[in-house]
Image 1 (spheres, rainbow, N blue to C red):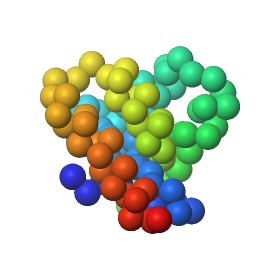
Image 2: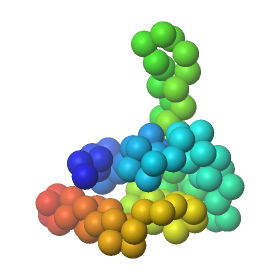
Image 3: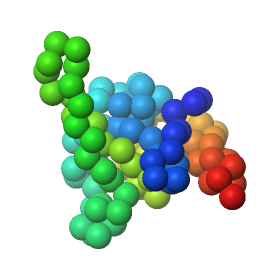
Length: 101
């Protein structure tokens, strides 16, 4: 589970990584992010659009997210991923935060 990296000193992950880890399609994860019931301020602070492109030149939308954004998203997913895996995701972020201190 090595899908947490840093952006401006803060641990983040991406929508494509979440899709891979939870066995969901990336489009389903993007849709789930769009449908989250949260304030615009929370959305702006915790979900960062990061559009990319495939080698073919086709757009590859991606969303970077903070730990808080990830937790909100993961709580909303209908996923067979066990609770222990969800706990490990949060622990990974916590480890990355303590690594920076």
